[in-house]
Length: 312
Image 1 (tube, rainbow, N blue to C red):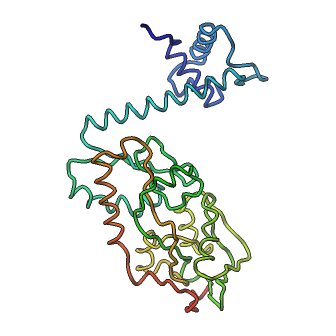
Image 2: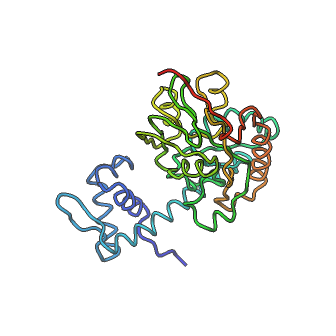
């Protein structure tokens, strides 16, 4: 029996207009003129016999029918996009699609990937890098994350633990930061906009309070790091991410590093997460993370220390 569907090109035009909020921007994305996109919208509404968009000033606004259709079409196109990419990936050979933060990808995962390819030369790893706020699936098979409190309970339950993690405050050698009694004192604390509880978790685990006069916030960990390297304040980061900076003397860790109980995990995000390639990746990254810990960096009792980065 023939499928009862409206013109797929009209659905695609509708989804682009609904997502971008503009016929003009939708046309630019689709490589169509404004009038061509408008014709597609009219054709869709005529096919359905009802309106999906209402005029709002000089623009258009989704009505209740349009919002319902947007959810259906967006979900279908996302599934189609993911399936298309998976078919192409599988045609090119065994692969796994991994989503993680840009900082973790650039500072740890990509530099270590040669080890995976030496062990599995026939497999391919596809990476999606994004912010912590947007880090969900992005069409990925596995999502790597340490802060999983905002994830649905089902995702948290399915998380595959990969490694212990330890976080600590870091700053430039010339920046004034001191540990006195049960407090880390500094002028400016640097915080990540989307993992706002990390400083609270660190304080609870380390037994130290952070006494600061001001706070700078950034949406990416690498921006927090750059701010710390530039002497703007004290940032909280995972020890593996700053290992080279500490060894080179570009950063100091006045309190050492404190374990975070949840650790780093891989969250299955597609049915392909059970594939041989995905299982091989999980086994490899778990072993590589376990090997990549410097004992000199894992000072776990900062209260016994009273160090200071002098100058400034």
